[in-house]
Image 1 (tube, rainbow, N blue to C red):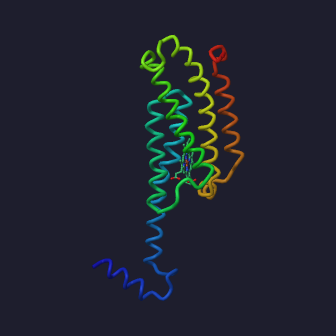
Image 2 (cartoon, protein in one colour):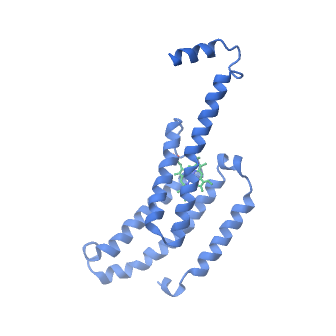
Image 3 (tube, rainbow, N blue to C red):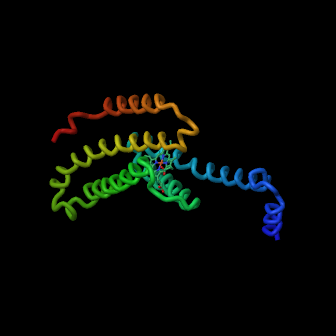
Length: 184
Ligand code: HEM
């Protein structure tokens, strides 16, 4: 019944642009979209922060949650997926980090089963460490590309803030790297 009333209200309005009903609908759609989508940058930023701190399990859970929100939000609006550099970086990062996670778990949990011996597994650990640093940089680059998507720039478009943030993080991480452990 309410639907019929709504259709009648639209039909009796001379201009669709000025229809209060349409305006209300657009307003509600935007509010819902933003309240849902905002959890993507929030949880992804928190996830990368925890990743940088080495708190891996919570970072993984937040990462899965944030990615689900981004993908679900697009499906909800029937939009095509993976249409920006940010999306390409994000998806590649997801695949690489999943591989890294499995590799790390194999070294720590099933060294003999997967690599033949604990010693052999230990020797491979340096690759896990090196890729960890590479993927961490990729995670920050992905975050950066997220700040350059049109939608984010419409809200906040100050490139220098993001560049400064990246430089500060890079200096902090490089400072903390134990160079003796990196040897190949
Ligand atoms: C490492 C952290 C992040 C990852 C792995 C990531 C990943 C992704 C992926 C895979 C999509 C595409 C979803 C789809 O096509 O269905 C996406 C969309 C999006 N993300 Fe992120 N994201 C991250 C952080 C951020 C941050 C910090 C922001 C904002 C500052 C952001 C803003 C956006 C926006 C606006 C979209 C929708 C537009 C588009 O698809 O390009 N993301 N993200």
